[in-house]
Image 1 (tube, one colour):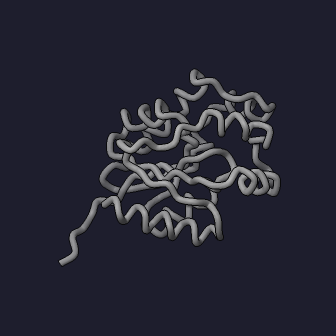
Image 2 (spheres, helix red, strand yellow):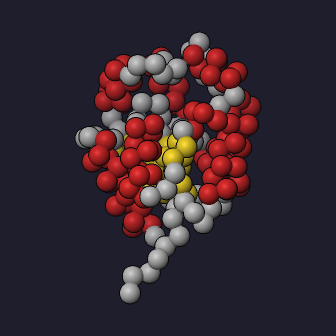
Length: 171
C-alpha cells in the first residue's frame, strides 16, 4: 500500500527571470494544489520602487515576506505553491518562522539565459538592470534547508516535471 503524504507547501524561488510565475502554476497543477503569485503580496510602494529600477531594502521586504508566510501557514497540511524570490537565507528563515513546513524549489540557471528571458517578458515591473543586484544578493539553499535546486533550461513543462521529481525525493 502506498503511503499518503501531506502535500508540501512549496515556495518557488530564484532571481527575477527564472520563471517563477510560469513554473509556479504548472507545478501547483501537477501537485493538485493552489498557486499564489508572490508579486501580488507586495505593497504598492514596493512595486513603485522596483518599477523605477530601485532595489528593495530588507525593511521593504519584511511585510511582503510576512504576507507570503501567512498564506503559506494557512496552507499547511493542504499544500500550495507560492512564488517568492527568497534570495537570502534570512528571507527564507522569515518564511519558515511563519510556516515551518515550507520547502523551497530554487530555480537556477545560466545568467545569460535568464537575462534573455527577461528581455522577452512583457508587462513586468522588474527591469533587467536589477538582475545584477539579484545575483549579488542570492544565497543558494543551504544543506540544512528543506528544498531542491532545479535548472531552468528547457521548456516550462520540462522544468515543472523536474521540480515534481525532485520534490518527490524529499517526501
